[in-house]
Length: 112
Length: 114
Image 1 (cartoon, chains in turn purple, green):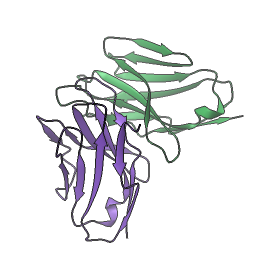
Image 2 (cartoon, each protein chain N blue to C red):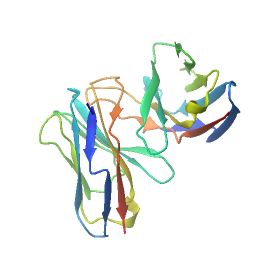
Image 3 (cartoon, rainbow over the protein chains, first blue to last red):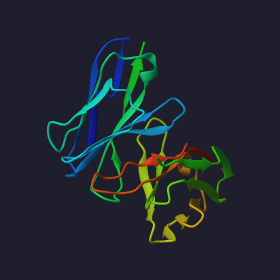
C-alpha cells in the first residue's frame, strides 16, 4: 500500500501549457504539502495545507495553486508553464504539530 | 524566515568509518529537526528526528545531537556501509496547527567506498 501517491510520475509539456499533478494520502494525516526539488537537489516548500489553513511560500509564483477536494487529496495546478518550472515535485503529508513528513515518489516535470 | 545551512556538500568515507554531517539554523523558535535520506531517483525518507527538548537521540548506527544555544545539530553515522551512500538532508521547522513547513539544508552526498 502506497501511503502517499502522486501521478503522473513523469510529465513532459511545452511552455505556456497548463498542467496538474495529483496527490493522495491514505495515512489519515491532517496536513499535506508540496515541495519542489530543483536540479541541484534543493528541496523547497511551496505550500502547506490542512482543512483550516493554507500557507503559501511567498516565493512561489501565483501560477502555482493547490486545490484540495478533501482531506486526503492535494492537487497542484500550474498555469502558463515556464522552462524554470522543470523540477521534481514532491507531495507529502503529516499529522499536526512536530510530526514527520511522509513523501510521495515525486513527479518529474520537464518543460520544453 | 528560517535558513538552514548544511556541511559538507559531499563526503566520502571508507566502509566501516564514521560520517558526520552538520547543520545550523537561524530561527531560535524552531523546535523540530528531522534528517532525511534520499537515494538516487527516490523520495526522501525520514531516518531520525529530534525535538528541541532533547539533546541527543540514537537509533542503532545513527545518532543526532542538538545544541540549541549554538543553533546547530549534527548527524552521526557509525560503521558506515555501502548502502548508506545517498544524499542526506537536515531540516528545521516550527511545528504548529498547520503542520510542519520544513526548511531543508542543501544536502550532503555521502559516498561509502567498499
